[in-house]
Amino acid sequence: MQSVEMAFERHRLKEVHIKVRDVFGIKSPMKAAWVQYWPEDEMGEFHGPGDFVWYGQVTSAYDARTQGWEEYGRHHGKLLFPDEPY
Image 1 (cartoon, rainbow, N blue to C red):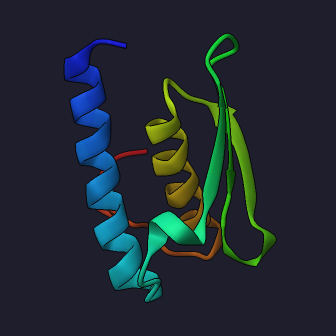
Image 2 (image 1 turned 30 degrees about the vertical axis):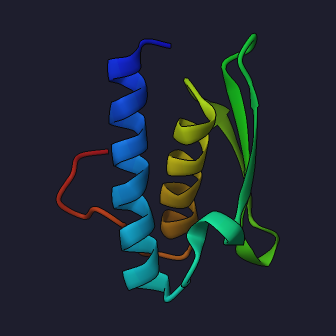
């Protein structure tokens, strides 16, 4: 992955972690979930609080964690970024 893409994904994850703290009160989102990433398939797996699991197509482990948290929010009826189109 190119460094510009990686920098964007890291920045996006940082924004998502801030929202997760605010919306769900999770003090350490990095410790509250774990991800698995298979680069050859561009697939990721996110394991969040309460046995929540999400699988999807991603570009990196950062992207898997970001998308996982966003899906966790949707699953609980809360959009982390309600003004953004999905």
